[in-house]
Image 1 (cartoon, each protein chain N blue to C red):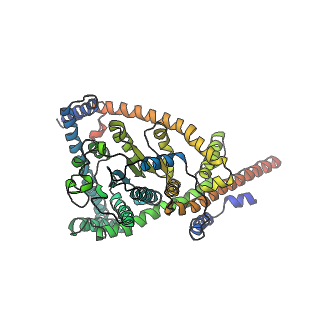
Image 2: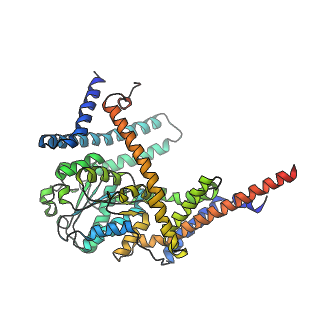
Length: 209
Length: 281
């Protein structure tokens, strides 16, 4: 029963959500509305699950006195601090609240800094690894250089044709290849969805089969 | 060791230093490079420009996190300034848990510039989890998904939201996203409800959106900081996007020079090895 009930629910709701697009009845629309509200409620539990999992991982690191447990203290202090400000501060969602201030003045600069480091590593990697060793690599390299120049104002100044070539690369070869990939991915998604609805693919339930 | 081999073994900290200088200097000594507007940005601008002043609101979904903030926040500010300048009301929401504070910050800053009233000219719905369920649910009834605004006020208490039930009452949705949220708006708002959707995404993501743009599923597209800069040019309010263009121009140029030098040094050093190998044998 532990397997049959989830499989049956998956089949019923999967088939319903697929065919409801083709049934213009109010009762069907009402049911869809209800299912979407249930879905949203279920998805909210994912955050709870994630939080519990994070606490468990770091708690075990601290308990086992792992070498890098200092970072676990920091992670847990950050998590519990933000949760406390979020739940227990009377004006938790007001602009300028401690929750908001910590987010804007600690998390935002940290994340933006981490992402900004990419510029430095991309430049270094481009110098060391971007080589025109083969015809394909040369095409990629030339296209990359044209698009990089065409996407910034200096490209217009160097030559008026660079932005036009950039547009052509984006709107012709890029678009054609993306469409091919997207159609393939779409068909793959449909096939996988069908396998899940029909109970052929069962990995989502966990376990070995 | 030949000069080419020396070049190839250059300490990468010199590259980091060059990039650091290239980013910083143009902020203090602007080059003032002209920004030419491209058709995808013009299309989105036109879609916003066509909105009726004072009528149903534009829905701006600020779906970015702090990591992509520098590219996407200038877009949010430019679009909101455009709307507020034209008396177009704006409803802001987010599908990203980290987007709440960023969306609120951008909205309050833009609204303050124009001295607008909360609830009448603009509304902040906050965050709801479950991207696809949220977008689909809003097509049926926004109140099912957001029974209250971000500050706990019931929707019917907000004058701006009184006539807004679902996508029939929203002339345009714009998603600014550093992840797949913008695609989700196309899949779940455009496709089933034929809701007009525009997008602003990071530069690396922009190429993924050309098929949607070409198929008419997107009203327009802002790609990276360049997209923001072009929009700022169109509304005649140069700001963060336009300022960043000088730095980005110099950086792109440096990266291209590094690629050229790296390749030249690589092939020269390889030819040197081949020649010495042949003469040695």
